[in-house]
Image 1 (spheres, rainbow, N blue to C red):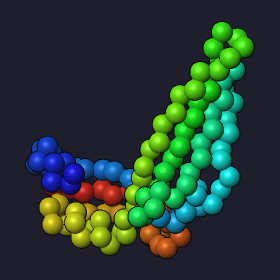
Image 2 (cartoon, rainbow, N blue to C red):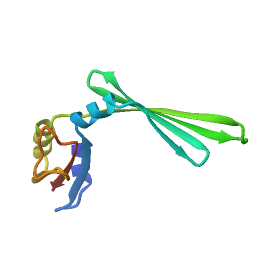
Image 3 (cartoon, helix red, strand yellow):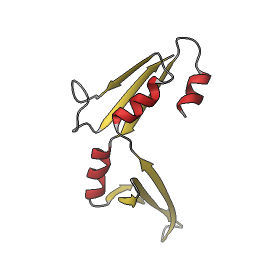
Length: 121
């Protein structure tokens, strides 16, 4: 992915992306399913461990159909996080500059939940 992003950038281009850290994913796994009503529809999102370092986001949307029944739309979305040092080392093999930003802290730490990577070609 990083190689393809680099190849598509103009000179001095910037590749920007974010990740959920494993700490944040672990918090979601520990939480009960999230339920949200919107209009006459309902969404239930349950985050579980998928094994082998994967996190599974099971999203179910119950769409009101004909006023009395529901139509189920369901998707499993798998996500994996990697240590910031591993990501940074991989990026530095290609990019001239790599900056890691924690939007909630002065600098990234073990408590970081979301990290932004700004990579310059």
